[in-house]
Image (tube, rainbow, N blue to C red; front, side):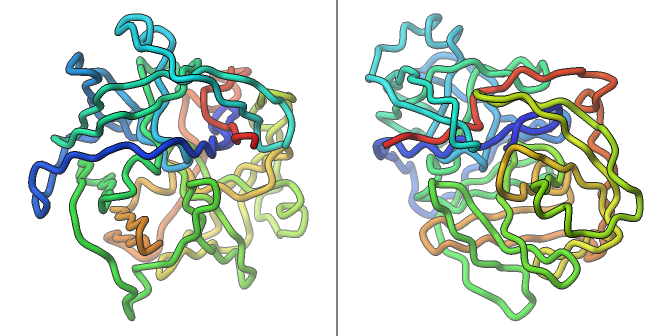
Length: 316
């Protein structure tokens, strides 16, 4: 999730595999999904303690992040270090790993999880950790935004004729799908930890706008600070059978890929099948609207955002 006042760039961290304990192979596990400024949060226990609020971030490829405060509170042991850099290709940083004996969410226990200890800053929300996309690789992960539920289940998806199940690729453990802006194909991250629909500056320069982009927010990565502009496209954006009519988009000069964040995701029930690299999208309407990113992400409310833990890429 490209991070700015409204984004955070992605962490594509690939850590050692966690051992998954399934209580019932065919059982569907679910938990309430709390939406705070559009981003999805669930309650998690760590080493039997808690519950603690964690954000679910499909735009982070690692298994988990924990805040320094939570790591200290639970006395989590060190599990080495990892080097990270932000998506600009710069900002090299060495950060510590900690070992979680168990992490339990929605009635499912994940054992032996290595988590990155890092500063977490999600719109001022009380957030003690982050669940990355690859943690759920052995499950169908459903984020039901309208129903406010997270679901973990066994099974598999298959392509359908209705164009509601789409293929994705996941270099660095992050799901990337193909959008169409007008008639042009554009790759975009599906990023529940991001906010709006963000386009890279080079792409936006080639597009037509109904409302010309103006200054919207200030962003910051590990290596640079930058100005974010935003405007309303004169073109529609298509994802499978769904259309966003001339949406409001944010223009990011620092990061190279489009980002489909939590605001556009809120209209859908998303189900991810990492084994088969498929995602199902379900929404009540096929024609959708996307207005400006809500407060407190706008510039007048948050003049400058300190970067949260994601937005980082492993080195080596």
